Figure 1 (cartoon, rainbow, N blue to C red):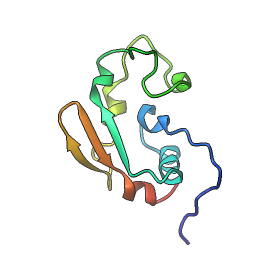
Figure 2 (cartoon, rainbow, N blue to C red):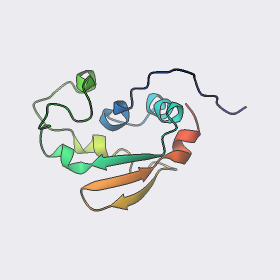
Figure 3 (cartoon, rainbow, N blue to C red):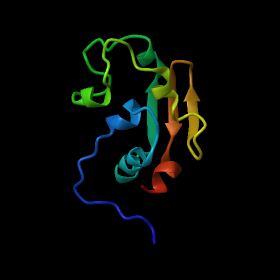
Amino acid sequence: MPFQKTAQLLLDTKALILSPQLGPVEREVAFESDLEYVVIDRRLSTSLPYNGVYVERGELRLLANRVVPLAEARLAKFDGVEPIDRIFDNGSIQIYDVQEWAASGP
């Protein structure tokens, strides 16, 4: 039986970018939001955010230490995960096709 989407679910999509790894929670968010692509800016690992947030307000609970930039590993977690494909890379910006990974459900 295929997975079914939950109606009226408030999704915390910033976890996809800020979490230290991809796990069941991140896959569920991607599945529930019909996520197709993720855009990563590797420059986020080189400095603290200019406006006080990396993605959106409310991310502090995901990031315990805000005196250093994001760890590169948080941004690289999409690399090498099957069936996620990196479809664009200019060195700073990567775009990942996560449709198949997200469609596999929580």
